Amino acid sequence: MDTLFLDFCSHKKLLALVRDGTTVAERELQDHTDEASVMPAIEELVTKAGRTLTDINRVAAVTGPGGFMSQRVGLAVANALAWSLKVPIGGVHLSEVYGARISGDALWIHSTKKQLLFVRGLGKFAKTWPEPITITLDELSAVKKSAYVGEVLPEQAAVLQIKPLATMNDIAAVLPSIIDNLAYDMKPLIPWYGRGA
Image (tube, rainbow, N blue to C red; front, top):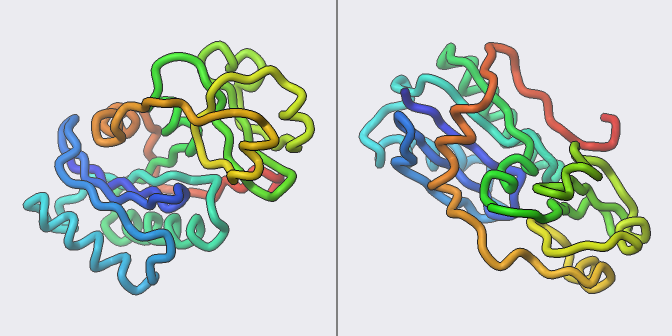
């Protein structure tokens, strides 16, 4: 089974092909990649893995949060590919990707505005924040924290007095598990914006 994975929500955008429990090809895209170069990059990745687009059995994509246009472009590409190839598609929240990459306890934090962040608890912190929520910088500053994973503006990290977790598992190693645990459907994925829209 060949699964094409797209993450356009992270600062480091990722394309990957997972075959039967192994990540066989991956490619990072620049943060401000021109939309016209996305399909050629996907085709190059699939070719590198010794496949063609018609060999893809399913598509998986990160649904959010992320940069507004990057998130929309990534999901539009994922949905269009799944529709044109007539294969199921599955979505994963960015916090779940980070959760799969750590062992232990941390907060997943993602900047959304200067005074707003998305937060989700991982490990022991899951009791407080089992699902991703929006929180103000002041509210999160008042909470006792340890390390975090995610993408936080440097000035926010300084206010929070928090440091990134020192080690994470390689994405290629955990991607097969993430992909195999998704629910796949023929319906298009909807972006997760985290603020009610």
